[in-house]
Length: 199
Image (cartoon, rainbow, N blue to C red; front, side, top):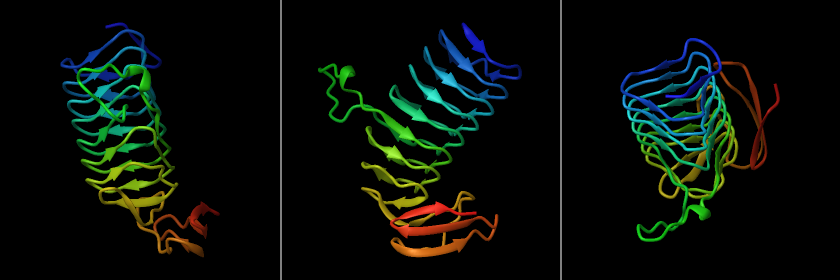
């Protein structure tokens, strides 16, 4: 293993493999049966559960939690504080065939800061999941998702808005309204079909 540790206190379980030219940030823990492929960059204070595959050429931010049985493929980018639930699925090509090489057709997928991807959800390549969006368990995302949107179903449909704390906000899907998170006191404003944090 040729791991470039940015800081001390990095844990890699003895059953896991880390390839060449990988950067792993401070206090990150990589547990059983993981494989981090070459040229990946992983931030600080991350946690990878059992049987996670990352890369190659993947960037993962700080405080990212990836639960068991998740593969983060090339062209997928996870920003800070993203949560990937158990067995959630990423793709990187729209029309795969075993007999046809399509690596030059990979599409980029972005999961923005604070977003949650529920257990067994599927994120089709080429989309952006907005900041603090919440994708319900088993949902299938095939289009861009707005920040703070609560999405469920196959294909995923919006049923509400979520706070940064992770609770459903008392807001309609569209219009003009305001509400306050009862846990944090943070205020949210709905303008037309977008939610903003206002204080």
